[in-house]
Length: 292
Image 1 (cartoon, rainbow, N blue to C red):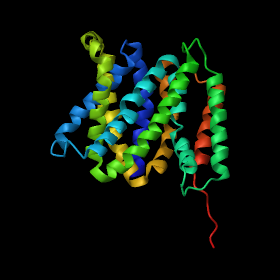
Image 2 (cartoon, rainbow, N blue to C red):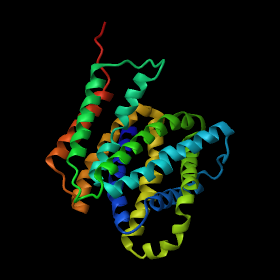
Image 3 (cartoon, one colour):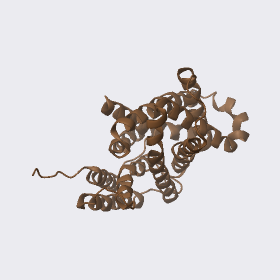
Image 4 (cartoon, helix red, strand yellow):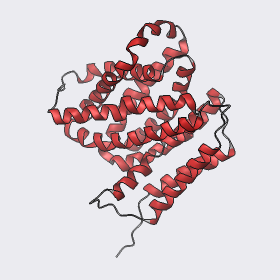
């Protein structure tokens, strides 16, 4: 069951890059897209967890706020801004790096019991080569500042790693529903200063059917369902193991971007994507140990 939830979440998340690109081309700002999707998810979730505690001890409340920023406002702001400058397929490929980054962090962290292996470092090297292929083949005609977009996408990948390390112990302590609700809430609160002046523009934007359709998809499916499902997956599978499924995202994005947006997937981009995915697989796949 948890594997099915992980696959569904990643398929929907892979589609969000295309939905976000549609909203950006319709005139909605990166910060407003995030604000609306998390606000919808938060309001939809309240009837199911209104009896749960709204406040926890202040140290954990600060951790909840940090999770809401690293997995919410800052993460999605960086990801949405990167889509302004680079193709959705490129951004999605770079966003698939957290599994490998988490393993490298686990190995390098002082006092860690996770062992280094040749798979890890070969996988990391392949991922770097893959990034070089992806970034080196970016077409300025298809995206205005592709290198900047990919750099911001890499920042969002790092933020997601921080989020996963923070949220797992919180979910174990307070439950998935409380943690997810607070992440949505703090995401909305921390992004609000950036969108306050844009609120009067919403009626004109929502006159376009593609705007409200994609916002509802992002809020109810990609945020409410996926975040709830992902926290369940992480609680039962762990942060590192569950992150293995994230490399499905770029495959979904590439197909959806080609079909919906008409984005071109070139041979160097495919080679780069293959290097990244193989690198992630090698980096996170556990070593087989001989029986003694």
